[in-house]
Length: 77
Image (cartoon, rainbow, N blue to C red; front, side, top):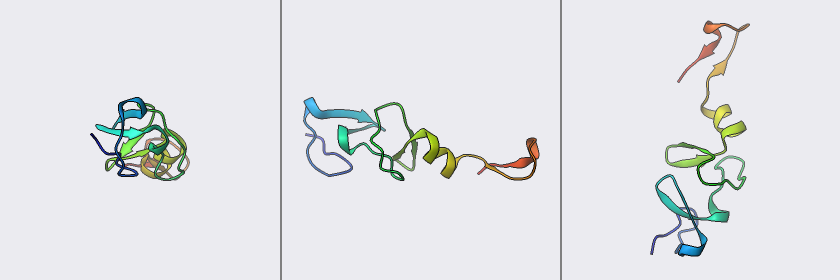
């Protein structure tokens, strides 16, 4: 029986949500930053951890803006 990566308890078929190649309990699949409950397939991933697309993932890992706009105003990591 697979174990939930968040709580490390067994995940039964009826309560399983598959995301990031792992099986989770539905309430355990949360954004690492804001802790909002996520639905499978509608979130982003960084270093194997789930994040909500907006605002957490884009604010933490998206392009950083500076200047007055244009192509030179973004820094990409």
